[in-house]
Image 1 (tube, rainbow, N blue to C red):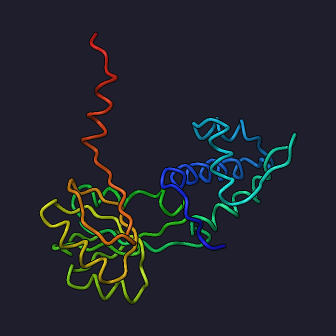
Image 2: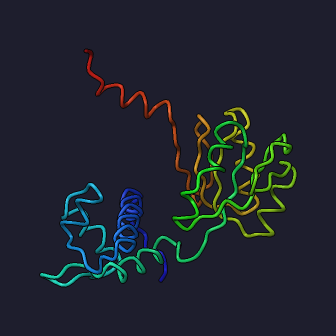
Length: 205
């Protein structure tokens, strides 16, 4: 299935739907209603149905969605039918923690290598290479996804190298705005900003 041009927020929600479907499969659930799936994903049923119509008509009135069938379709839409190789650049405290996180493999993503200016920062199961080797590694292994966890002053230079080598999507943990070509997608994760937003909801005792 070719990828459909849909709003970025819808793509994000589709990822959440897929995660919910995987949990249902693990629990042996064969069908799910739009109301139940929407509730599990934290959205309204009308929003879920609207998002899914980008990819076709699914479900049977009165019965709901076949969990396995819908999951297979969304896997193809998201490009996650097989393992996606990912590199992680910046193996400091945050990068090391991300390398140890086991949830990536479970969701179909495999961190195949780390890169750092101090490659002696070895990880038990994932090799850490010199920054000078990053471009050649990306080309050789056809890596299209990358996680960036370097200091802000180095981020743009590293991203330029990634893009030149063929990376098309970047999960950015560096606290800076990256300049990339239109065809490259960057998702920014600003932990301090998230805490700042949450602080609004903290009530004084």
